[in-house]
Image: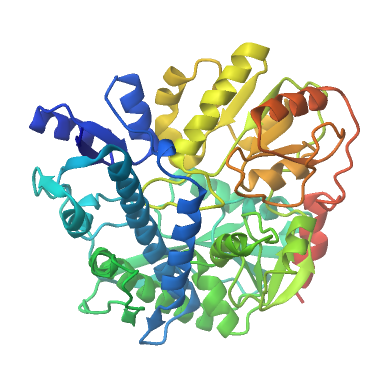
Length: 554
């Protein structure tokens, strides 16, 4: 019997659809929040896990790679803007592919009678987090009877075209270090030995609260504020073409979705101009960046062109690839955080060093050792296991090397059973993008502990880390905590790992069965000496910052 289904991105949108139709609709969850809400409120839904497998990941990754490789920009553009545009394009494409493949598979097994969507839409969103199912209307209508319930604009266009200027001045009497931001543990530099020799600066668009201004003053940190004013120009959209092919059924929809970001990319180009003007007129001795994409990557891109020493210190884990799908996925990850035209690239681990066999960088490698990752002292009070994975939402999904929300949910279900049965304490470090789901998660999985604490705090009492792919891998190894790569889908191996769970005292294990997970955890609970030297360098980040990064300043 064919089914009436509905699609929604938020709980409020789902409630609206169910209230407006008064029909017994079956919901197709598009993210973790909707899936958990349906589960807890007895709303009939279809779990994507039952319809999509590894073939979906592989096909989608190939299509995505083919399309993004075909993009040709018609105007000269800075690298940080190009890869930001490619990333936005890829995210929108991935959302389309996920929805399209899922509906096709559901239709094959269940037969779709009619699709209901709210029709809610945002015009000119500030970021990726907007309603855009309505933008897929044409794709839906080609295959299914589609019912649009309203054409409501959620928020009017609050974006404007701006030009920018950077407020702040560089002190010439000391060596000057410019950060692209103070996130991802870049604050460690502010407490480095000999810090009084340097002036520290960072770019920000945010207003600095008084208490932070006082702290920054004490630490000799100078925020460089990006100020805006309205621009008379309003036609600076990105001009580009990409491959037209019968396989790319989504072309027109993709272009329509991307047009909503014209203001965003106009403003990004204007920010680059402001950075260029500032760096041309001020003496900077070293630029440190943890992201090379978008505005965060502007100082790296512009500084390199002005021959200022630049160092790329990734906040993500960069690993070697093992097959073609692996290669595509890991190239995407590196594109945002470990690419571009930096003069130097910091190699923080031996995993990253191995990646250079398959990932090419343009600059000179520096064996820096750990700079950005967690690095705790060893503790003997080991009480629990930490489970932490990268998790993306519907508006920014990644395939193959990141688990989808429904795969993550299935892992939680099985971990919850293990914890309840064997009394194994499992703390789930929820990905920041899913913090809003914590209360729903707590209600759903009663045997698991969900936490927003910083990973360094959780490591103090952890004897193992379970993950799929995440920078938590290197956080854990640098903190002398073994890692279990849990992959029940038999799809992705992040780095070299021990496959035999009966082998004891290994830093990294790869497991595809939950029965093996229990065995592995039992082994790791026993006190043992593990040698981590095949994966990480042994020096402390304080020494690495001083000897391997600050020493670059002449």
